[in-house]
Image (cartoon, rainbow over all chains, first blue to last red):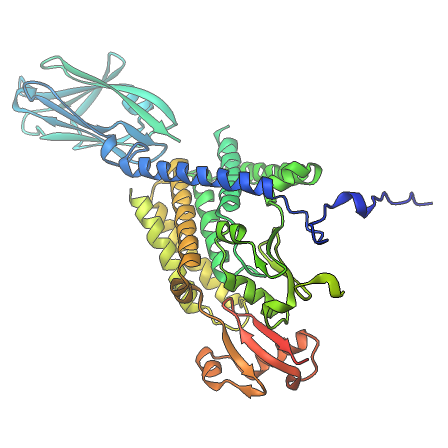
Length: 180
Length: 152
Length: 146
């Protein structure tokens, strides 16, 4: 024996339009929805504008320049980066950066672990672990004008990194926001 | 796991954008609609997958999306309110010879769309149309009949 | 910023391609046209996103496409002339027993398409058709004789 199907009378379930068309229109809802949609479009436009400005990375607002007063070190980086997307942390050296014929640069560990450094251009001759970071050395004859760190942030969030010229003690500590 | 979050966000956002972008007039999906949805879908999956091309990631995200879809459709079925949020309601565009201007304008339709639906229904002009209703699918249904229903 | 530009350009390029490629009669896409659309769509996606596969980038691209589509939608309904360019216009193929040859040849519709549409409406012969119109979306509307 099959159980009988459940039923519901049509009279109660669908509202009628004034001229007897069964349509189930809900204009109140629709009007509220139109206002909601309008708000959404405004938010969307703002988001796109922020993106073009660079708040989400890759734009004018994202680029940051820092220099030491004596010009020994100029730092350029993006303060807004994106997950697994290439970015460059760039350090320009002034003449005072060289000491004892060597050009040395120290970077914090986070440049490797958080920023996800892939390579340094140009490659330093040597690197050693020091002070929870890495010390890179370019010997005489190989002093570059600048060193670029090609990074790809490993995860979304906020990280801090530091760069220091051991020769003069100048140091920058910067914050980067990584969007997912 | 981040993969799950990306998948959930990707799916929900896609559903949201498609809902907000609105319905196109017409019975079937026009070729351009296919293309647009494909474009949006492809962008969604690129953001979801990011650079993780592993099989594991693929399985996890596929299953997550399937679950999300299941939950959404179940909610839509169970709750009338939710169904209305997701799909909207039918809307009257023309009633007894009166264009419902507010609806036509806000849905970004033109009168031509209603005339096309009328023709495709076999009516030759608006005097033969009693109602034109925009269905949730975007299709415009025509209820034929004179302007005055009295004579029925 | 490049994503936004690429997304907008990609959208219009797709619009143009679909408009040019797809033949009018019948909104049904042939398998071949589906494949082309997939290919073109896929390439545009890659070009839009570039090497940046972050959620942020893709979300912004999606939002840009949504906004552009909305804008085009609004323009299309406000300006019939623009709509004529983007969507095409309805054209009469058959009127009072006369095939409109110029329209049919121009759109590359043949009589069989119209006859098939008439059959779908339950008419046995083309003589029972008063008007046959090809709509903007490619489908053929039949108005039977009274």
